[in-house]
Image 1 (tube, rainbow, N blue to C red):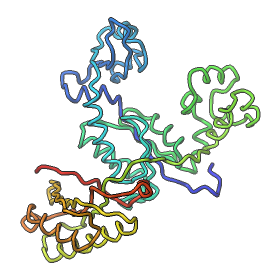
Image 2: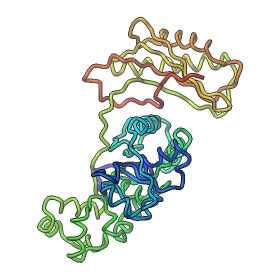
Image 3: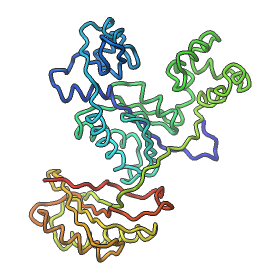
Image 4: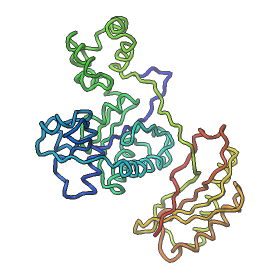
Length: 369
């Protein structure tokens, strides 16, 4: 378990299910339910990038020579990768992550860690956040993701692999020790094929088997990795979720418990929100040129309207007056609204402020309605 001087975190690991193959099946309905293999030609020296779960049943896996994949799965449908399509879907997914936290560490196009200990929406349950993210990914992209939740990165990563596809697994802090002792050593993240073979030869087949080894003995058997194995079987992983994302906007939003139609109340709310944006920007000594108003109506239709100013600003009146103009481009007052948000983008952040973690509950973007 974690040492007392390290805080318990709420970490989510999101891993898309057979990402490239799932995008292909989404975009080409005739491929649904078929063994799709994304990668090079089986007639050459191609390699499998990924494959659908239908193909995995035949033993096909990533990094396998395409020729071998064709022998294992004679009915496999080989598809050339379309990285533009995968990058587009990945960006949509990443935008969803940033609605909840700025502490996002992408590992690849289809995988990322999130620290939601403190999050933009003030949701105390990491499991609930993971459920909402999975739902949003499905609604936005038509794809499924598996999620793991733990109090550190190692546990979250292990958890996300346990129930694929479309799974969600929580490892609570008070259950971690027993869980890891019972876990097959092959499921420990960081134990590769060569290490697994060596561990089996040493009689290490479960976490309990690994746990009886001293740190010194593990170091003798596995070198520098020995300490890593000693720690992870005890649920110890102090690595932080690292993000180097440059903040491109600063914003806040609120979902109302009741749908709102009172224009006086709405103007007062947006005035107060403009003040919060101005104060936050002033604290980080930054300003922006583009103001965006986000509106979600009663029926969940969501739009954004943006306007660019001639100069950088972090002044409440500048922001609010611009928002009032943007309101005229919406149906506020005609249709009831359930969410309103304001963001300031096109920022003048200097290098010293680039990595400031801002409380930004949404990423503004222009949407045609």
